[in-house]
Image (cartoon, rainbow, N blue to C red):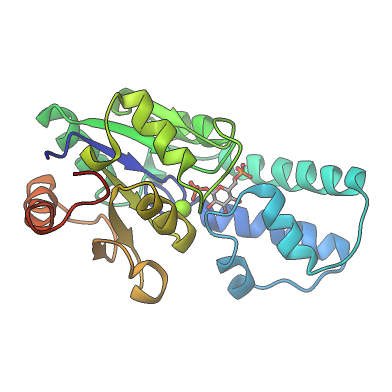
Length: 226
Ligand code: B16
Ligand code: MG
């Protein structure tokens, strides 16, 4: 089996929108008088909008109309930050890796829970290096279900075991493993330690090194398909 494509999570992998999500949630929480902290925001990494607000509300009851209004409000705040993003907001090493993937003839897709993923990719100037985008609008079941990454692999015309998912969230690593993908986790072991390969970030990462590391794993085990 050969690696033919990469599927990148967006927030925390290609760019740090996590900070903007945090500021937008914090602003909403302050307005609603709900205590919220940076630490609590960590639990929202990779989690879709609706699940995120339910976690933020910590069991407080509310109507569906209120929930909708709060989600829309948070998204307006978030988009204020996104609209100021430029290609300088691509995280170190990400652009170089995407360029190497393109030069080598491999495919690259986005697998992000965000409904704003297309806009963010556009602001970052990464569209020319991306073959397919699967986002929060693409599937019903979000991470940790594997559906989003399966959707992305389908768009690339590849099998899960031909793809590497790059993720920064525990829910994303779980989703990739459940789908039978090779998985690279970015961040601390406590968060992404279940991935096949764990790195601090994409800074200085070379495609050839990733492939040779994963090829060793491929020869000794299968990601999900034989
Ligand atoms: P939106 P990812 C995720 O993006 C974020 O990590 C998460 O914090 C956010 O709540 C979710 O997208 C939904 O985003 O509100 O823009 O639809 O990490 O899957 O790229
Ligand atoms: Mg992420």
